[in-house]
Image (cartoon, rainbow, N blue to C red; front, side):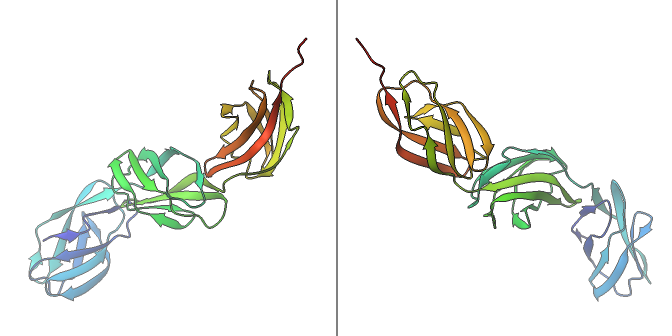
Amino acid sequence: MPISPNQGSTGGGTLVTITGTNLAGTSAVRFGSKLATDLTQVSPTQVTAVSPSGTGTVPVTVTTPGGTSNPVPFFYVGAPFKTGLSDVAGPLAGGNTITLNGTGLSTATSVSFGGVTATPTVISDSQITAVVPAGAAAGPVGVSVTTAGGTNNGLSYTYVDAPTVTALVPTSGPTSGGTAVTLTGTELDSTESVTFGGTPAPFSVIDSTTLSAVTPPGAAGAVDVVVTNPAGSDTVTDGFTYVAGPGI
């Protein structure tokens, strides 16, 4: 007498299909000592019922005018618990793969990013991966995981657009570096790196439209300035000019 699915939430509410023989006239389905609800006689060989709440593994039996069936096991699964995401931000277009860590993830069937679902790959009971779907707009969204035990929320993922840089002040400085440069534009609050001529520069985010960077040493001449965030990069071609000091 197979049942499908053979596992469900500890809170109950799982619709279970029971297939067997001589099931006509089914009067009760029990999960352990508890009666199932919403019993439906589908055919003489099939009934459906909704599981009650429970824990652990319990025997499922069917009662008809002819008696009570042999038991088959049903496994109660607790709701998943997520401890973190490998990446908390990514491009608005999606397509990047992230790892979710936690417990009770082995039966994960979907991961929702702000209501848009992705099908996860189960690595273990403590880890799954998912390809992030495209977002509707830049900004944070809730992340939830659905398993046989239920749905758990509590984590956040932020969709970001690629940055744009509209101005740098000042646009020149000594080859020794050390010039404080203010960059303005859009989507700068998720900046991961700033480079001057390919050399990384220390930077501080002021807000979504402003950041400050300190030029590293460089050879005399104009260099590209590149700002990068999880969604991409913006290049200001010849955006900063290194000026050699005087010599006698």
